[in-house]
Image 1 (cartoon, rainbow, N blue to C red):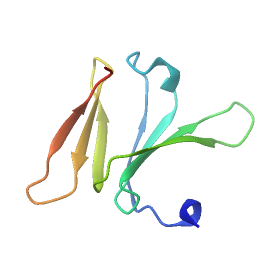
Image 2 (cartoon, rainbow, N blue to C red; image 1 turned 180 degrees about the vertical axis):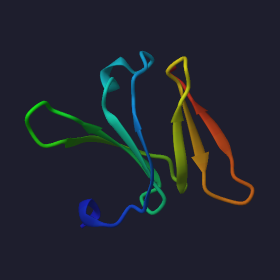
Image 3 (cartoon, helix red, strand yellow; image 1 turned 135 degrees about the horizontal axis):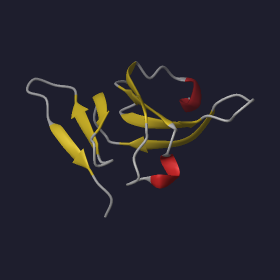
Image 4 (cartoon, helix red, strand yellow; image 1 turned 120 degrees about the vertical axis):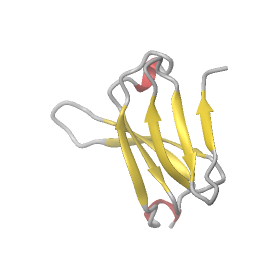
Length: 88
């Protein structure tokens, strides 16, 4: 199933910003095969839960949180493209 396919994870970020306040302290995991970023919520005393998958339509090589809470998304490729992810 789609849920079970390999995603080839490439980076892991614990989000601390305020731009996406509902993501605070969640893990953001980028993936090459899945062409997406998965958001995993950590619950005190229980198992982590996948709460959202954001499809980018391209292989995501990396993700980084900027000091202002926005995100940088690095597309896999040569040359690679760097995207700034902000709230509308």
